[in-house]
Image (cartoon, rainbow, N blue to C red; front, side, top):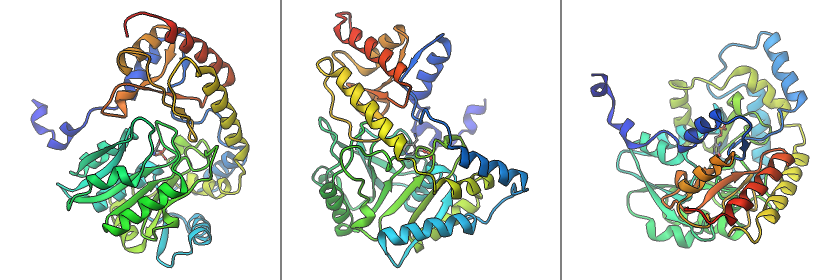
Length: 373
Ligand code: PMP
């Protein structure tokens, strides 16, 4: 019996519910797929060219743990220009996920608590569990605002960190300047780490992106190239924050990920110079079309960023709704995957206009359909 070999931590979380939707998708012939959490555009040509050139030039080996100096220096200069913190250091990670794993492993001891805003990105509870910590969910229904007032009552002497994701997956909520500032001050006041996952920072449609690092010099920022440049498969991200914390995260990287893939790091240098704002504008237009298409059919908190909308199901559970959608050839993710409540569903509008139109049509039908939820 191999089961006896398994560590206790494997029992603390389940495989992602998103995978189950992908498995269903594999069985459908021409699904209307609004379930995918990655851009539908390709990596920019100059970025692909830079990776190919790096590979052909033999830049294929390990790099130093913190990443090649050419990319690190460029990122450090940007971070310094943006925040001007004397103690803020950048290093290169294996994707944003890699940065999140390192941050939580570096900060969380068994028994420690980490505050996350619910609904939440699926990885957070899993990584906190891996680190032996406990996730404390801060309920943000019905408006999905990640406010300090909502977080404050959940702080205890065991709280180690607050995790903020703005723009947010799965709700599309973008924290306002005041909200970010209040959270940054709350973390400082209680001397807890504030980890900011900024992977969607390019995709803010109605208000500017604000990082808590603007208001809290000790904020730990995790970012990456997956969404901004569609480089999801290239595993390239970066982290910045207090040097002491970065040093410990690097120590863990040295003995786990080792380094981010070298060709991707060279491509990252090119990626930093590509203007991706046209793609963000395109996604803003798609957001407008989707929200307009669902108006009057679904209760939807206006999604201000990322490329997700999180409407309420008309009746029944999110899971039952997603199953009914699959029967109509539409793939969306039940809200229960991201939340303790299974009352909503996630739509990704990182898709072609045609797919979005087909999706709207099916969703309108599903809203009108009086069948069991
Ligand atoms: N954070 C959030 C909020 C995400 O949605 C994702 C990807 N879906 C990640 C992190 C992971 O990104 P990466 O590909 O850079 O590991």
